Image 1 (cartoon, one colour):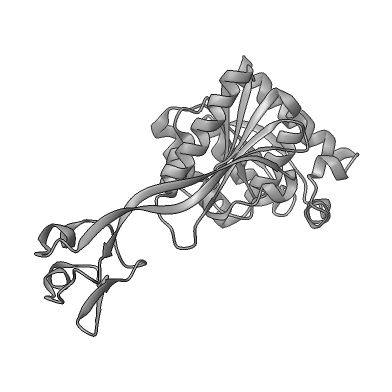
Image 2 (image 1 turned 90 degrees about the vertical axis):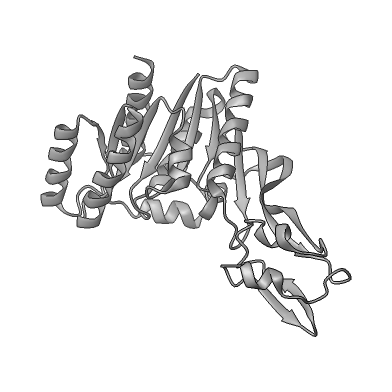
Length: 292
């Protein structure tokens, strides 16, 4: 079993559109994991039929029993996050401010404060229109610990791939270089960068490559919308050569991507011409590289 992770240094490069296209091209030979849990949207293109849903808990949150609280204010004195408020002589917790450190519970003389497991989202096992399984999730509004939810999504995808004898786990990672991306990269066999020929695209490609190098994972790069700026495209290619990143494809700017998204389809379903051929050839190139 091989794990392919698709990431980008910035949003808007077409990462998710291409990953969804690869999921359709891969068909039943793979399991897909949408690890962009902070802004999950691959389900829009892959039409998942949910087979299993499970709540996800991570971290703890302080909760004050108003019956036991005497309003002494000891908790408020030690809280560094302004997470407590007093009304009519009784304290309560402001959930968005609480960091779950537990100090208030330790010093409460009435033992009126308890630390409760925090519900931060849900994860799902679904059947997508390609006939394969996708593991995806929804993070609650303002919820943290998305890196742990990413790990859960990935682990479930790998478990199913092992049980069903699937050859590939295809992961749509988050943009950027933060904790969710680090969690997405753990255990990967190959990383696909999706970038664009812009100043910010090249800058963020350099940043995310620095992260991937620390994991010593082989990588390749797709330059999407490659004809928008030929000068920067050549700079991107020079960087790929210098950094030892395999150049997988140059994909031209094409409004078919937008039309496909509006229709809730992947580009390989909507387009039957040159662009679909480019993406299909790129997917085959990725598979050949991973299986070499």
